[in-house]
Every structure is written in structure tokens, then in C-alpha cells.
Length: 249
Image 1 (tube, one colour):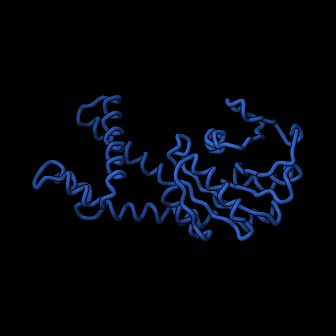
Image 2 (image 1 turned 135 degrees about the vertical axis):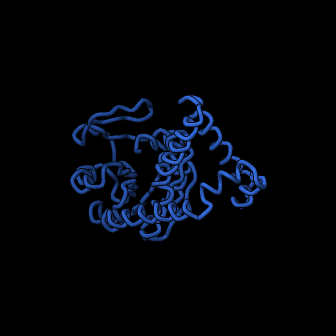
Image 3 (image 1 turned 30 degrees about the vertical axis):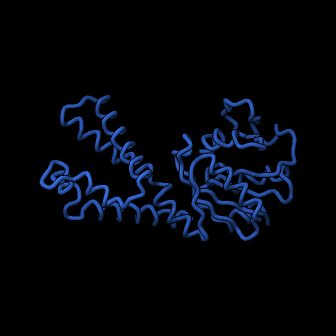
């Protein structure tokens, strides 16, 4: 995810980046990549981006604090690590928690932002600008708000991929091959979402507009959610994701 975001951030005017990764290179020459803290040149840097696994933060990040300015903000994309926990590691400074989702890699992500009480308006705007380069932004006021965001938008691509996969399997059962099923399902989903986004209408209204009385769509919808089973399943799905996110905090 860090690399995906970086591929969008490099196009933000007036900003440059250095990255540390012991294994990877970055295909854009505008990013200087170091293998470890021992290799870092330059600084002090004016922003610390934390894009390591949550369980690694306490062990890894202290080695890099000497390279950043005393008042440099810390921006973390690590799931489940609270602002308070981050402050205990990076010290008293601006802390921004970001919960991106995978479509950020193609500039279509939805990112949740949470700022600690030390974050200035200028730093907030910088964070917004960075995340808008990867898609849309939703700001929340509390850790719980970010957990709830995670259950919908953070985990959401996984839910959508699974629904699309099941839809494709159903298409294959009707006689379409893999390629045909993929195109039919993904193009149908993409067009439907674009239509909903542009219309601004209630989704139930749009559903009804494409559903003829006693027609094929109505017959399918009765199976899909006629007794409310799909609605209950989606509620259970997001509640389970939310519960697990809270546990990880």
C-alpha cells in the first residue's frame, strides 16, 4: 500500500520523497530509495511516513526519528495503531492516521483521515492534498470513527471482489467462458457504479428504474434479497469487520 500511495504522491507539486525498503526498488527516479537507516543521506526530513506492518512500528520507527525535523508530522497508514500509541513511539508531534483502500493505487481510493490535537491546519491541508491524489477523502473525529470507516471502505474492496467473483461464477454456470464472464461482470459493475455516481439518485430508485414488473430483473432480485437475506448478510459482514478492527486497536 505504501508503494501504491507513493506512486500517486510523486505527482503532488512541490513535494519530493525518499523511501527506505531493504528489498524493493521504486520505478520512479523522483524517489530516492535507501536499503536501511544506515544508508540514509540528507535531511532533516519534514514528514515521516509510517508504512510498515503494525507490529513492527515500535521496533523499526525509532531508528528513523533522528532523520526528521523536531516538528515534522508523522503520517501512518498502519491499521489499528492509535494516535496515542503512535505518539508514544514518535514523540509529541502532529500525528495523522490514514486508512486508505486498495483502489488508491489507480487514483480511485477512499481514504479516512484522523488528526491528533497537535495537528495544525497547514499540516491537515498537506495530508488532504496527498490523499486526494489517490482518490477521495473522508475525515473522522475519533479512533472509533476510523474503525467504522475501515469496516466499510478499508475492507470494502475485499467484499466487492468477492461479490464480483461469485457473480462471475454464476455467469460461467450460464455458459460464458472465463474471459467473457469477467468482461460481462466487471463492465456491468463499472457502468452501474458510474451511473449511480453521476445521477445522485437514491439507489432503490435506480434499482426500481431498471426492474420491470414480472420481468427477469425482478425474478432475480427476489432470489437475491427478496426476504432481506442479503441485507442481513451485509450487516453481519461489516459488523464483523468493525469488531475485528476494534480488537486490533
